[in-house]
Image (cartoon, rainbow, N blue to C red; front, side):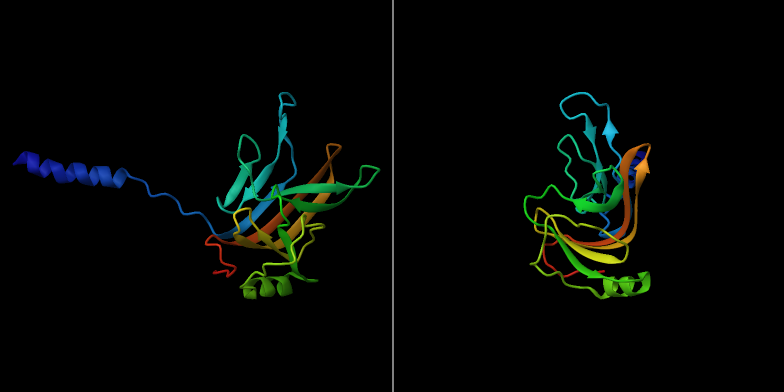
Length: 181
């Protein structure tokens, strides 16, 4: 009889200890920068941190981890940083400048009402990126994301060209061009 009371207790303990897998965020706000990490030795001595829409997070661009996008500074011949751009390892054009605004309110309104991505007019780089732009991104697997550029910083940081971007995004994981928020 005691054994029969023990079984439900054990089952409850086992089931409560199982952790649910955290869902991948399909929307969010991200800040990423162009800082190089690494030791300076080996076949691939440095790496960047980029953003993966399918994972919903920043990831290291190394050891088989391939982000969807990275940010890089654009420099003048003198070495001064003049702008920033988004790059992708995709072998096909993946960025489309959907809209650009003079202020955050108009950009945010457009971003919220922008519900379907076009499947044409893409270019290889998002260059330059500026606050209040809305970019559409097509992943290597044919999925879409929309990005609202909130802030861009460029400078020489410790004598090294540096860029940083903060953006909001909505990712559409099912392959259709329709964004659901």
